[in-house]
Image 1 (tube, rainbow, N blue to C red):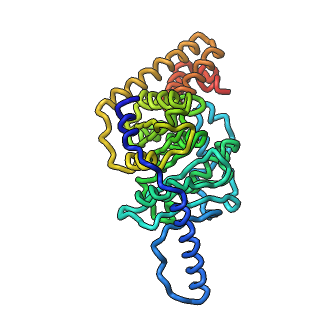
Image 2: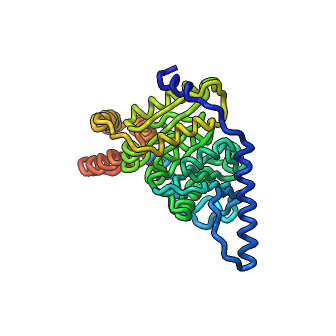
Image 3: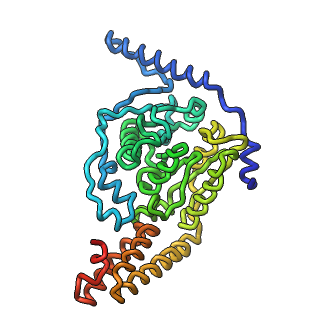
Amino acid sequence: MTIKEREFAREQVSAPGSSKSYSRVMRFTSAGTALLLAAILGLAVARPAVAQRQDGVVFTRTTPLADLAEIERRTRPPVYASKIVAHGQAVDISKEHFVVYVPSRKPPEGYALLVFVPPWDEARLPPDWVPILDEKGVIFASASRSGNDTDVRTRREPLALIAAVNLIQEYGVDPSRVLVGGFSGGAEVAMRLALAYPDLFRGAFMNSGNDTIGTMQTPIPPADLFRKFQEDSKLFYVVGDGDGTRVNHQNNSVQSMRAWCVSHVDHRVMPNTGHDVATARALEVALTALLGPAESTPGDLSSCRAGLISRRDAKMQIVQDFLARGDHAAARRALDDVDAEFGGLAAPKVWTWTRKYTERRGTVTRNVEAILK
């Protein structure tokens, strides 16, 4: 175990019992009934300052961020995405249901928000998390029918995006305190969303699920978004020490983020835990880090980025060399490799070089556009 992991182990405390959390839900139910009765009778009453758990919530707003074309633009390598014709909203929001938990105390700076992507199909709130959500002033939301067996791009991603946009507007959530999280396969989706939407999600909580980036499965988004992700996004990983290979997978993901110049990355291993939802204490540590003051961006970010660009350019030169020799098949394979690894960071170089090459050769059949057909 690392020093941080040993410190985390010493900090572990017993998680609050679920019965206390359940009683909070019941108080909301009673309060809601009282308010409804008062409204029917025309009575003027103040809304009690109690936590609100709402099941079966149906949102009324969708968002262009959840349009299929926008999802593809952000979550696919650019050459691959250019071949896909997809647009419109993939889900009928009037038929989707969410569980939403709103703490009673709104922090002075506004609520924070955690949109949670589950591996299961039912909308569920881990009961031990309720006291921590109350303490931190964090709204929790999770969608029904968004488990591991459902499609990522047409359900899991748009449902999370729609929940975030609705709750930010409805509850005046602080935009700088919007998080996405998930457990197991849901954590992998949360990572993809944090990477592709750093202008919406400012941090991510990955619980026992993660992946490396710079691949076809988790590609680099457009360059402007990736710069924001590198500089501003906070990531927090947590995994049980008895969770088999996922401990190593977490380490690999952390190393991948750092290799891609992502500035704010933290991780923990939960002692005496398997493939389980994070304990209340683990959630508390994660939210404290994700919602706390941002550390200054490391001074070596510029040199790290320069190294990435140098690697990209070297691989683009290979594409150019194949094209100069007229070997379009090899050029296509090389370009696919660049596209998969560098994603949005390759796009400007591809199109800039294409224009120059076309002008120099005077033919559209011996440039990158030819091998994209």
